[in-house]
Amino acid sequence: MGDSPGRTRHIDALVVGAGFGGIYALHKLRNRLGLDAVAVDKAGGVGGTWYWNRYPGALSDSESFVYQYSFDRDLYEQNPWRTKYVTQPEILQYLNGVVDRYRLREHFRFETGVTGAEFDEDSGTWTVRTDRDLEFRCRFLVTAVGLLSATNLPRIPGIEDYRGRVVHTGAWPQDLDLTGKRVGVIGNGSTGGQVITAIAPVVEHLTSFQRTPQYTVPAGNRELTAAERRSHRENFEDNWEQVRNSSVAMGFEESAVPTFSVSAEERERVFRRAWDEGGGFRFMFETFSDIATDPAANEEAAAFIRRRIAEVVEDPEVRRKLTPTGVYAHRPLCDSGFYETFNRPNVSLVNVKETPIVRMARDGIVTDDGTVHELDVLVCATGFDAVDGNYKRVDIRGRDGKLLKDSWADGPTSYLGLATSGFPNMFMILGPNGPFTNLPPSIETQVDWITETVRHMLDTGISWMDVDPETEAAWTETCADIAGQTLFPQAASWIFGANVPGKKRTVMFYLGGLKDYRALLAEESSAAYPGFAKVTCSPVPAASGPA
Ligand code: FAD
Ligand code: NA7
Image 1 (tube, protein in one colour):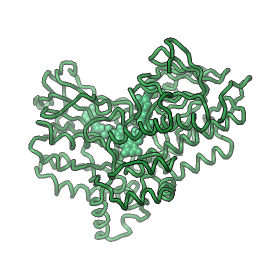
Image 2 (cartoon, helix red, strand yellow):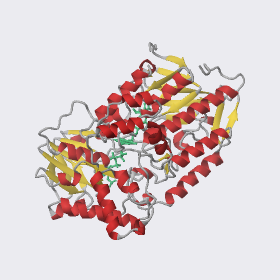
Image 3 (cartoon, protein in one colour):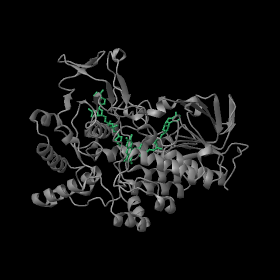
Image 4 (cartoon, rainbow, N blue to C red):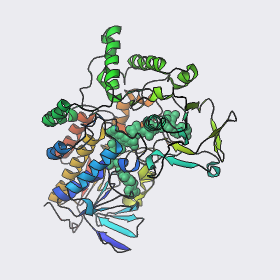
């Protein structure tokens, strides 16, 4: 883009992030509103999650026909995905194709991290600093910084003495080949499950360090039949209508049948069919209506999975360590042979609650029974400082110089996951207390709403809009109320910020489903944004205006 060092670029809108959210936001702001919009990402290219997470086995757990954009039927029809789920290289290629198709590439700046942003009330503009000796002055700041993006690394004493390599799955080095190596993997969530299953056949030895056993069901990945692919294309409108009018937006009808309204034999049949067909969300939400809300129903599903583990895992001690006992209330997982992997002779399992990691030595991990687990590479599949992690790493100052970090000291909040009080014209994609769903349809919903809101401001001469603090507090309460009606808060997961040491446990999602969420957004915009204070500066700062 030919920016000279130290230059301030005056633009209409800055988008931060080049994942699903940032790409679509840039497309809408430039190609629909005709704004001078630029996007930056600290990554070296497009893709967000799918740029960073290049670990072996990286795969979507949303089904491919809904893990993509729906805003352009032609784009959808040209998409060549042939399997039930999609791999990281395929998604990365798809997103690069989207960027080229809509002529967006020249408007991205990569390897450019945003370090700070400050809002000026008088001019109604944001000044955004980067690590590149380049700053932006813009009216609209759209943050698409990712909710599973800021990596969470375990703090292990002596890590600096270790002479092997330490990697996080969310920052996977492109040159790493694990073939024939002794590899340790800390973590057994969605990512840990994928990487363990993928690398076990190629490494010399794999040691899996697990803190909490997980419930996971088969993914059932397979080639889609020609009839399925045709049906996805031909039923485009109906499928996406169904997705937008569902709760988790995964492309299936959520069950309305309570677990105990059917006989024990029927329950077994339904669970068995879901197990054989595959899919974590299907197992939790397509089988019965109350697995995520009723403890007894939840236990029925959990017991079914425990019985399958007992059938699969041969060694009684390994089986005991792999078998979860608590509530089934993490983000539902699916896998490509996770439990079977622990029958391999080159795979061992350490339960780090029973035998904690005490330190790292030159050659590997030392556990408190005195064992040195010798490792050439340590893989941390330890997840993310989810939702607000990337916001806390940037110095964002809103009205009266207030720091976002301080504003969120008791946990991140927002109105509708889109905006937070005191930070006018900063629109978040997948901000705190946004919908908990398959994410592309929620991202599209939010970007469409942001685009219409910006259009409204341009049309009506509003300079900036700021969420009313009471509206935000009410939304936080709504999200807490809904979460409280589910079993999800009972599991210590990233959904509630419970996975990072020292992080305050709090509600971070709207669990009311995409259908209701979309209705709330429509209400807010059709009533001319009652949840926001609106200010007109004099003179109104110039923007390019709608094309
Ligand atoms: P991201 O794709 O995370 O992009 C955010 C970008 O912002 C990053 O590239 C980052 O570098 C950049 N950024 C952050 N801070 C700054 C800064 N200060 N300056 C500059 N750039 C910055 N969701 C599903 O719905 N289904 C799935 O199957 C699924 N599978 C997943 C598998 C993995 C391994 C992971 C980690 C996540 C998965 N997700 C899944 C969630 C996934 O993150 C979303 O689906 C989606 O990709 C999010 O897009 P995004 O654009 O909002 O954020
Ligand atoms: P998750 O789901 O947060 O899983 C992280 C895993 O790492 C989990 O097993 C954790 O155990 C474990 N962990 C984290 N820190 C430690 C330490 N310090 N010691 C031992 N074990 C640790 O992250 P993922 O990347 O798997 O998945 C995140 C989302 O991305 C997923 O839901 C998909 O949407 C894609 P714990 O359970 O906390 O005891």
